[in-house]
Amino acid sequence: MSEAMDLYTHLIQAATLQRIGNVDIVAFDRRDNHKRFPSEDRYYTEDWKLLNGIWKLAIVLDGHGGTATVDFVLERLPSMLKLALESALQKGSATVDDATLTNMMSKTLIDIEEEIKNDLLSLIPTDPDALAKFDAAAALQDSPGNLNVKLKRVLSGTTAMVALIDPDKRVHIASVGDCDAFLCFLAEDGSWDSRHMGFAHRCTNSAEKARILAEHPGEPDCISSWGVPRLLGLHTLSRAIGNTYFNLPVNVIQVIGAGRGEDFEQSFLDLVKTPPYLSNVPEVAHDHIDTQKFLVLASDGLETVVRRKLPSDPVSIGKLCGAAATKGQTAGRNLAGEILFEAMGGDSEGNIVVPAIEGKLKGRLDDATILVISL
Image (cartoon, rainbow, N blue to C red; front, side):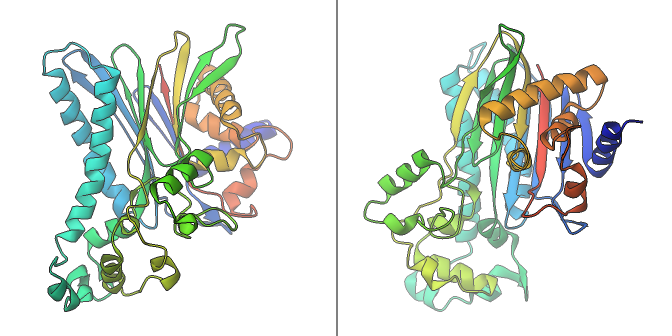
């Protein structure tokens, strides 16, 4: 057996692989010093037989700060989307146009965030006098040190990459956060190319930074200007579901701090002047290419893996995905696993497969989840 095959086998044994219908999946948990950390990534895929044919749903979620929010979104999102799509189709049209799908997908994601916020606020008195006497720890903890799940959802968060593929194979993407999507296709010269359908909802994105500053005039410090840009000095993301305390007034944030048993830093509270700050509004894209072959969805862990050894711009990652998926298809292997292997350097000298598995890479290597839908 070749050394490259040994490395591939080693990686596949360390990762979690699955195939659901025409969707290949790989999940690789974060490791550090041989210790494997529970993943905060989640994924979901399902086919729906609806009035005008078969629709496919595929989701990648990248949780952070705990799993309460990501698990809640995983539980609620598929059924809410299906109900909304069924309702749109039952209005008499044989198809659903892009504008309708944009509104439907956006509203569903926003509604989940509103549910998280309202669930918490239902536990907190609105009357100022009652709020001043409110025992937050007693009300927001199920037992000492055990936070109520509604509070956990406000403190934790997740990004969301949602794909719907309609019966005509047109791809519809809605994204909140920094997960990625690549529609891979064959170019006229036979080489691999891709259409990047993700959105970098991070404070490092100049367009996102400009949007936030425009929404909060006179607050230049709402995005930190030292080191890695962070929203209110804390969050690298500019959009997410959960982390609702970024979008509440200071007096409610202080109640949340009392409820969790740890006050928020005053430096953070001083920056909260005109909430909301962390957007939950998705960006949506639609596309179809005659020579499309694969739709690849990934948590941002794919990018963090790629940039260790290879160019990590969207064009380069998209081409890598198309070529690797084809290689895996030819070899009869899991297409997502093949992408992860090639992202780690494949059989090239100096690949990072072994140090990634053993947790010996310098710096943090995030959870990586990849879904490959064959079109």
